[in-house]
Length: 427
Image 1: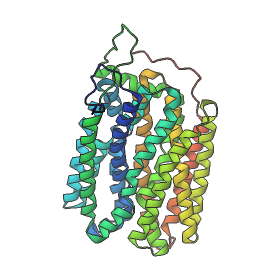
Image 2 (image 1 turned 90 degrees about the vertical axis):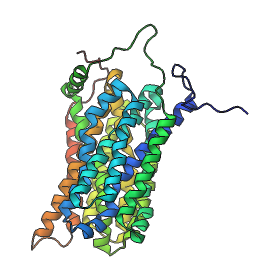
Image 3 (image 1 turned 135 degrees about the vertical axis):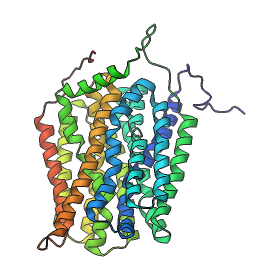
Image 4 (image 1 turned 120 degrees about the vertical axis):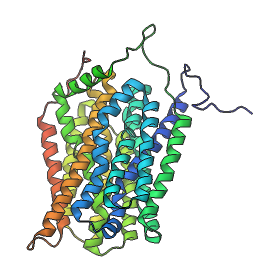
């Protein structure tokens, strides 16, 4: 019986079949799924960690932000690494740091060690989604970018399912350390899968030409020149807030808010987190299929951002538990429009800057997540310290997120848009 070809058995100079390329993309999304699990784990572990280490809301914000600060700060180097050394070598080199961070989290004797572990995990996960988007941009037709990116984001969102009901049940039955131990094992399996299945397809350079290998100095210079392009700043302004709003809700405040406002248990909050993750899984797939194209895409991005701000205003106003859950699920579904932001970036820069352009956008996204989680933690801590402050600090937290979304939408609308055609940057 014939044995199907795998990435490991295909010669390096052979052109992989579309089916094999899809299989490699699925393997890459396993790393992204674990990245999603690590970045949303605080929503379930916040309450147990607060009790175990006697943490303030501001300290919880620092814990949740540490991953994202490290993740975002490393995007420059990951983007350059992908452009210079390829998708496979970059992810296989970085991801073991996430495994080491998960191990340290499992054994952490104090809060400082736990924060340091989050930094390690953030660095290790830094290329997790970037390798997926660059792989799609390099090896699939441009018109398939939005739909395949939506599929990758949807599959990656499966990682959030782990940090819903399953993790909440495990933590209640055992401890928060058990949650990190499970993620440690899954991260190791993801690395092994990528190592076994993913290889770099042959270069698509024109026949008779050899791609020029840049020096690190040239690569850094070209990266920096992205910020001299006027339209980069509008992209960065919006990218820094949209995903941050979703992750600040799903990854930090969902559990504490439902427990404080409605007296729910950790497992009940986990059910909502699980439902939100399932809805968020469908969102990118939906928006990837209904992508309106470059002519109308930016108007869609602006409208979706304004609608998301309105939903957070609804959470700030509060209401019965069923209404708040419905608003959370609506935010989860709407967040799928973020895949259109990736398509906007893909169309805004020349092909030879794809890796670095995606890295700039991803850096903005995750530094934005870190800043928003730290900032909202500060807002919650500040309101709780005021003797005459509100009984519900989460109202101001949700209002702060809504305000940041409105500011980002204004920046995106007023800052220059990309021109129809872009020339490569010469260094």
